[in-house]
Amino acid sequence: MSSDNGFNNDDSPNKTLTHLQLPSPIITRRNRTASTSERALQNPIEYGKIKSFCREKGHGFIKPLKGGEDLFLHISDIEGEYVPLPGDEVSYRLCPIPPKFEKYQAVHVKIVQLVRERHSKWHEPSL
Image 1 (cartoon, helix red, strand yellow):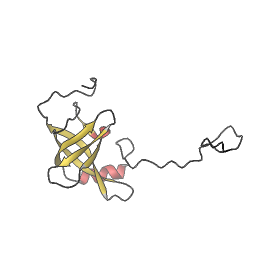
Image 2: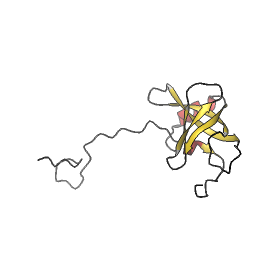
Image 3: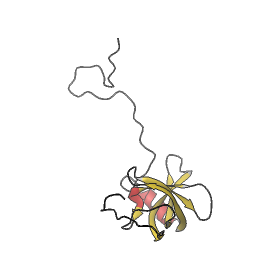
Image 4: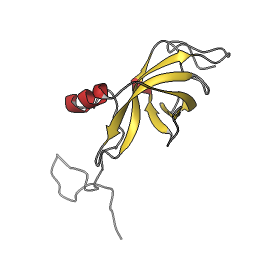
């Protein structure tokens, strides 16, 4: 009978997890390195529309106006006082996503044109 509870089987007071936990590939403003931030700031400002955004999950997607794949958007990269809604026009910069730096996410996201719906502010409860 196995008693695998995720910890090593020694009797030491400093038991450690034996399961490998991989880091998330999502780079938030908090864990972005200085070099990655520099790389993002060198990219031009681009424009798109919010395709979807879930405040509870903390992320969403932007449809670039120039076409191409939808871009991931993390809640920590939104600048401004309003929670984005689908259809809002935004400006952003592209930031490469590790480990291969082949895909991009949107950073320094600012809403430039709100859709004609009531927007909640970050400090207000969800609508």
